[in-house]
Amino acid sequence: MVRDYSQFLPLSHRDGGSSSPVTPLQALGWQPFFSQQIGIEDFDATPPVRVVQVHRNALHVLGDSIDTTLPPRQDVTVGDWLLLDRTRPHSSRVLNRSSLIKRRAPGTGRDEQLIAANIDTAFIVSSCNQDFNVPRFERYIALAFEARITPVIVLTKADQVADPQTYLDAARTISDTVEAVALDARGDEPQSVLAAWCKPGKTVAFLGSSGVGKSTLANALLNSQTIDTQEIREDDSKGRHTTTRRELHSMPNGCMILDTPGMRELQLTDAEAGIDDVFADIQQLSLGCRFKDCKHDTEPGCAVAQAIEQGAIDASRLARWRKLKAENAFNSASLAERRSRDKAFGKMVRGVKKLKESRR
Image (cartoon, rainbow, N blue to C red; front, side, top):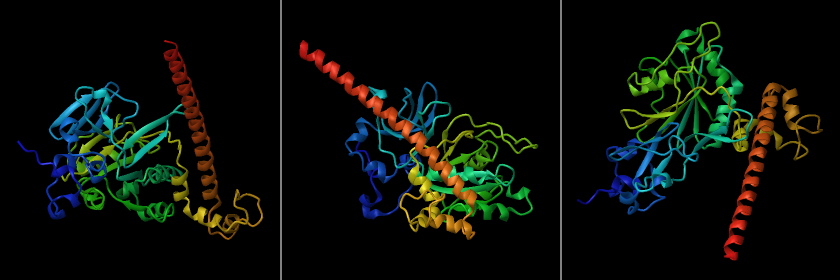
């Protein structure tokens, strides 16, 4: 039987570039970015599969007529695409990622934790209540910008407040390039409000604290109750951890949804460009400072300080910018030092092995 490989090719390589029904791989998020990394001859020998769940002892992967588990790997996260090596599953090749969400792992160490890969849109979710927190939004948006992911602020429980516009206005002051929407996570509203980003072949992720309605939103888009949900505590609007693992779910239209557990700690690392994008107003103003290395503190001729005096920028925003820049610099330097040590150690090991071989 001659297999039809057109589904694996970029649209421009198909007959006339015309649209066609969503194929099994496209429904899993397969895009030209990935097909361009491999040749057609690779598909039979090592078919592409996507990691839809990461368990402690296994990776759950799906592909075209493939549903199996692979051994766990530290370098693989949910959303990754692999070329499945059936004879040596642990050696399955990881395709280059279109995007990667990562953070400094919780605790006192300086290791990186991979959160998700190959996400197109990150819905950063908060409620119209005590959970609303501008500094937290800035962290998540910087994370998305650094990962080359489109961030969208989604405010839930809009039906439970008298004036949700107040929350929307505050959210829209964070960045001129980030859209913000308010909705009721229950019912049909999520499907209509979020439709522009939930298209066939795309992958979206819900990020935010516990109890803000991420799982409820996912269920609304999936048109099911696949994901468990819980009510928040009434006294402080805090949520309970319902989602315990990161898992991809498939919408009926061929869009993939990633529901994630609430992250109590979000430490940025290697995210300098993302932070600069969130605080683009400060970056632009700094071009007018007298000194290129201006810290926007007591230096003469500081355009940022002048903007604060004139009320163009709030001093608390500058303070948050400083905090994120310092945190990122510390975490990134620590990781760079560890990588340098690992590289030096590996070089020493290779040198010892080479010396032993030369003596044989």
